[in-house]
Length: 438
Image (cartoon, rainbow, N blue to C red):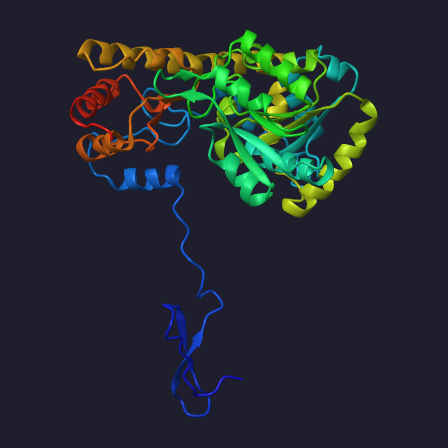
């Protein structure tokens, strides 16, 4: 029991709590078990939104967080999603029982068919496994854990640049021995450094995990051509590497699921075993539902149940059972031809708006005579554009024009509208012509 003695820590700035002694009524200070916990660095993309919301300027624009917006700058609930939710609300047979650890079967099978194609040899021969996860992040984490524990994976390769959470998952959460990089973005010409990419992947040790963005590379928006994908597949087979596709934008990138899935399906055709993390946040607008699937393609159907059983043990310790609501929405759409066709129209509408915003921004910069070349804006694809702006210029956008984007110069094209695109273009022109990066 604590007495009236005073506990002090003169060497640290620890947080202390006041406790009253029962005997003497004096105040004493007890050191907290949390006193040495240091504040973590803010997550840049979410801090950006906090700063944006605090800005009172009517000119403010948030080009940071990767979420689709309409031309009015507001979130869009896909009509087909709304329709299915209304059907679910009216269905009194639905309950809130636990799903199996591996997820909703209609969802996982539908997700696998979507990315591989109905006639995929991996599906026909029962060599493809689907496992529900907490969006793409959870699918990558599940796959990374499985590879580490059961395939002796301890070296992973990610492109430079890449989605920062790849490092967080492989390096910090799963603690791979090494997370190495391969060249991807060529800053001077603002395009793909394919020669460097191929050279670095060739140098990877046998069994290394290679993270590949299936389409709409985040953050650059620069993708491989079909011939380049064929070359990477050839290197992967020669070096006996393990591909891990991050498939966050299937359907959303071009409005064409088959086109966006081309690389994944090509690897199947070459008999390559791989993992593919699927997210339905963007393509279905289900950001807060955390709808994800991990697809595993193997070369022998006998391995399927073994893999699934081990993944169930991993998932049990992380989230136990996945959520139902979003998965049921996606499953309903993917397994109903009429609803699927309706959804195809939605993703085409979203991708078309992104393409139009790219063209409008490019034309505005061109008409302003903004120094440099800006064709990369229309050459890139998907939600993001890697503008080539430096940190000082990004800060100038915020300070002078109330425009918020990441220090890397990545902007969310969905946040541009016909109402703000000219303002953004003029702001970019201003910082490019007046602020020089070191």
